[in-house]
Image 1 (cartoon, helix red, strand yellow):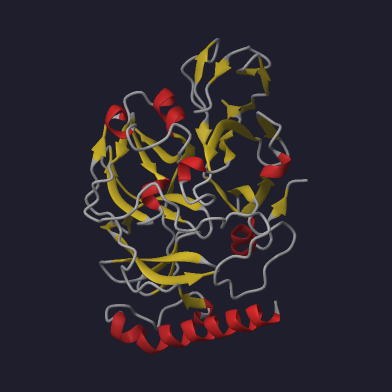
Image 2 (spheres, one colour):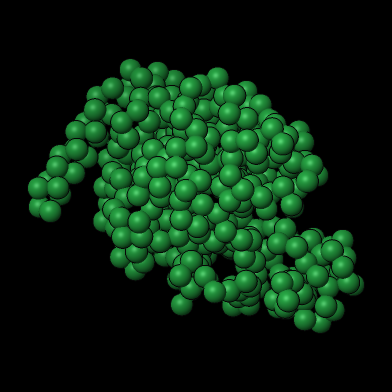
Length: 364
């Protein structure tokens, strides 16, 4: 164990030395005089700039075309905007980490950091400028550092924050999305499309390059700072940030619940949306263990909190008996057609939430 720790320390020191020596040569457009972080926290993850290639010209398929290579319980990032729905399978994102796309005229960056299990979608427009993103090959708190190709500013994926360069201090607007199974995606969005494997790159899509990584007691890759031990490092947690405060809901506290309503935290409600294969368990994603997925909403309508219950397989509000889908839309009863406000949240590993949000409240 001591030898492993020594090796890890030497690896961290080497990777940081490498990144500082070559940074100016590799990043001629980046303004390193502007930064919001301690640069000693930045480590080389191994691949060089764009060594993990973003997808810039995504193609999409119908369900029938995609079902030949994706299992029903495999995870996808579901994105819906103005009636248009797209799914981004993690079996593809795990090899590219960024998809620069457009959905109903909204320019987005769909991102996934496998090391933090962090799937987040951002608006690519900043200060009236349209950006496209790539991977730097660098990590901070084991999380992907992206860069924009227009100014080569560096961005922290977990928080959507510009950390180095012209856009240091800027925050990307997050676009609501959720992780659900391919089967549930088909049910909820029958007119949706699916990201194609025709990416322009040859990768073993369907395989997990990080087998066993999400063991709950595993150690994060290249985590320089001390790991917060309030939760097991690789436990999945739902993190919600509202009014500058973050609250974490460990999956271990939610696994037997279809609904969790937290009136003490801005009246949010969490719906269970089913189960998916972990993208970070077995070598074959389709053979991996199942883990739950969730969706988070503001539980108020017209300024009044709706109290929900789960009965006979249905989500109902207690007062009007209206039935709701896990998409937050009422499909029957007095509230039929109404939509709960989608909240930004993340189903990420605990170590990452606690590293970036050390003051987070943990739901007990």
